Image (cartoon, rainbow, N blue to C red; front, side):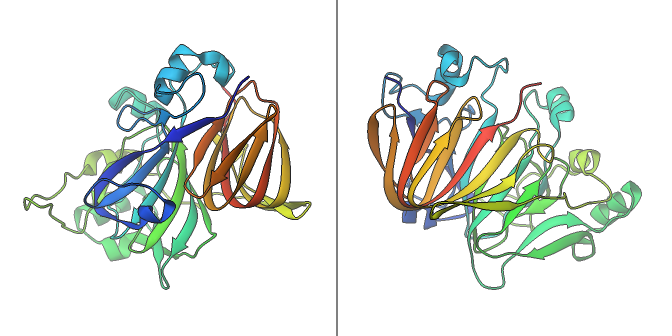
Length: 320
């Protein structure tokens, strides 16, 4: 009998992190923890399978050794990465490369990502995009440190969703927590870091040349077609899917009662943001609660989520 894979996250300390991830029931390492790499096969933070025949394997090992669970994909690397980010302080202003630039310069995938906002303190905002009209104007503003003129600030509240294609200047700021779905990449070009220093008094490295190379000019907000539908007492909201994103589809599930689902991708990823309930598939029922993350493999054709649950679900994009 095939089971869903429940995953043990990997936690990343960050200069801007805090301790709010403890609210998900996690036993955090000491210090400022900024990121929970919840569903990850990336070598910088691999998640580990906790149950079933593959228990003890990392997700990366399972993807390599047991491809049938993932629909025998052609991609050599697991393509997605799910994180929870706790911005106790503002993140650096940054930008990510696309697949072509990343393959040439970093030897990994590019990084398109998206954010579902779990919580945001009153008055919170994101850095999302910029005001430069031409590449020359972008470079001039960067080199002259005209950050207030260059950077675009967007108000944010819980429940908001942002799609962040590669080439988008962006940053979470103080008091925001998000569920991030992204390509499995750890390439970040740091454009501006508020002149912060670490515990040893060192400023973090900036990547101005790479940032100028990969930033999309002018910035244009992606056109999202966010739609919701009722299924019984539950609501499924489609946040992004093809053609807007070729890398992943992302859904918000507000489960109230029983929500039956049928497979429509090679596998599905789930993160429980709040509540508790059960997952039933292949004749077996599993308790699920806030802070759980799991993958439903290819062999499972349908399942039922039951209870009162706040969930973000994602599936991989079509292989090229």
